[in-house]
Each structure stands twice: as structure tokens, then as C-alpha cells.
Amino acid sequence: MPVNGATTSDFNSKSYWCYPWRKSVTHKGVDILAKKGTKISAATSGLVLCSGTIRMGGNIVVILDPKWRLHYYAHLNDLKTSTLSMVTKKPTIGTIGTNGNAAGKSQHLHYAIAPIIPYIWRIDTDRQGWRKMFYLNPIDFLKGA
Image (cartoon, rainbow, N blue to C red; front, side, top):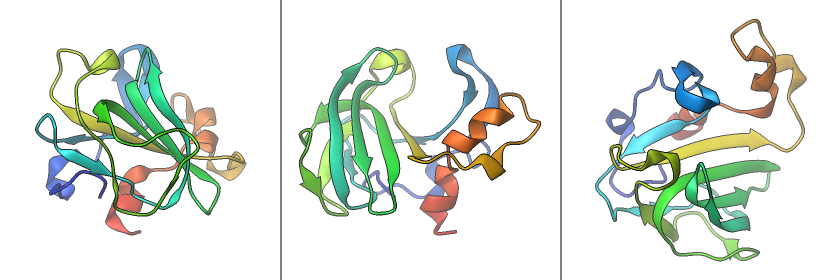
């Protein structure tokens, strides 16, 4: 669990691939609720590919894990890691915030996982089902499935 002190009751287990979802149409991650400033830890060890700011995600961190998956952390209040640094599981990479397209909403971490090589067998007939090859369900990862 990347949010310090959070449990599975701090997110909606049906929020992954939920639609309609504002501009992104489908919610491709999980929002873990917590108080602003709560520490966020790396859910995996790996290489920090990006620690910076983008329009939709606000302050973000992207970590490449040993299984060639990207772990995306968005809406961070503070960034506590830097691009091209190595992290191990559990160090603080940032804190909970509400920036990017989460401005004015409940404080949370948006957490998503994407494989580097598309998983074409995951495509289905859901709305935007073809995009499922680019995303993994982070809830399965958080529950240890």
C-alpha cells in the first residue's frame, strides 16, 4: 500500500475501469483517500523515470519496476524523490495532495500501473476496452493478487 496507514477500506474497489470519468472517460487507476500531507511510499523498488509536474496529474512520480511495469503516482502535494534516482520499496516519494485535475476534490493519491509492452490479451468489448492492454488493475496489486 503506497499511502502511509491506508487500508483497502480507503479506496473504492470498483473504481478501476469505472466510467463515465470526466475528461479521461474511463478511470484507469485507483484513488486512495488520505489527509493532505500523508506520506506516500514507493509500492515497489525501481528507477524513478519522472518526478515532476504535468497538467492532469499535477505533481507526479513514475517508477519503472523490475518487471518492466510503470507505477504512476499523481496529485502529490510534495515530491520527495528525483528523476533517475533508484528507490527501494517503502521510502517516501511524496505526500498526499490535490493538484492537477484533482484540485478542489478530496485529497487522494491516484495510483495506476501500466506494462511497458502492451498486454493484447486483455482487450475486451468494454467502453475503451482496447485500452486495457495498456493498464493493469492496481487493486489486484494492492491486495496481493
